[in-house]
Image (cartoon, rainbow, N blue to C red; front, side, top):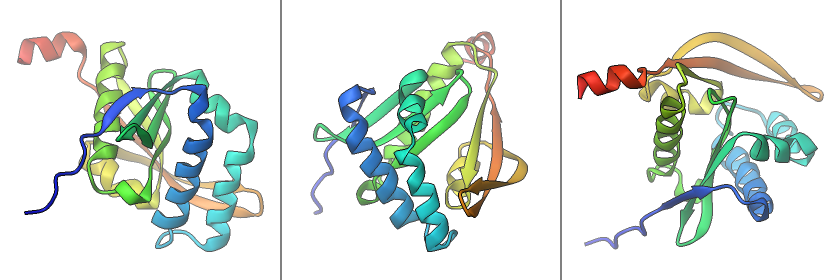
Length: 169
């Protein structure tokens, strides 16, 4: 029998997490997006972590960090209680439920705080994950990154209002 994977944890972002989350961001883009984006597109995308706005995105809204054996393994940042601004999982744990755990927690928190919807600017490699979680494509975008252009899709998911959830339970 295979060895059981350690149970992941979930906690709020701490300022000391920034360097590790930058690493997760960079490794995730470098290793998980190669089928959809060129090397120069990936490099332009990764370079965004060098901008001060990257840290601001983690501190201004709600950011949750998934941990495995106490070490960060992924993160999700929610802006204005409805915009998934950053969502990355380390390639070593991709496909092991870390992203689903992060997303489920953010959806529950956003819904409990009265959000009517969630919106995400989704890179091509993440489209199947968002579709599986009930998001619908709204429009196709071409985002300028330095000398490169990145294709993304704006996706939206309507959330059930808390009072409707109580009636259906």
